[in-house]
Image 1 (tube, rainbow, N blue to C red):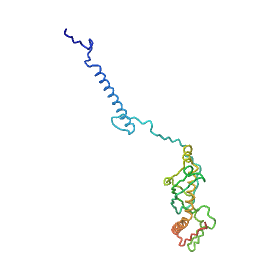
Image 2 (cartoon, one colour):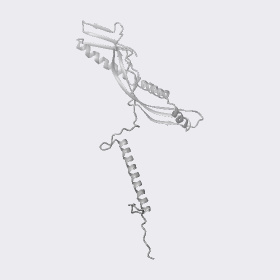
Image 3 (cartoon, one colour):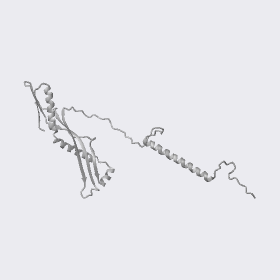
Length: 239
């Protein structure tokens, strides 16, 4: 007998491919869709991070840091009339080196050392308000005037926070663990107070007062000389 070839496709079927080849094409299509999806996600993610303009949609990054200022309005507490003449100003800089540790405890466990660079200024001024009687003696006959003033004073050091900074810090293990749970505003305040004291001590021996006396004397001699006084004598009291 002559074998008869049978049609392996059911009646009405239009798919000429065998099942194995159909499954291979389906798997390739799925992989293509997955790759396109991953590329789309990566491109959109890059657009969110870098803010690409152009054809990508503008989408805000939901994790952008935001700062809200809820400060209250400034309240004016008082106004003071000043009668002082600022005659000189000095700028200072000091390195504060503070170390705190405990006896018999290894430094690697409990130790704190801070190097703080503090910058600030101190003004020297002469107080003209409340001068005692007889502070100004005028002799119109010979066109002379004598001015007796108090000694120049120094203001409290004004720390410039824009120019002051922590240069280096060394902390033990216990100090680092403690810092994880609380801040140390008292320690920072102590460093600032120490910086103020050091700058005040330096200003007191810097010659600021002498420079203030000289500048005040020149100012009064020029002003009173323009008023017609030939001799102007300016003296200062003891500090």
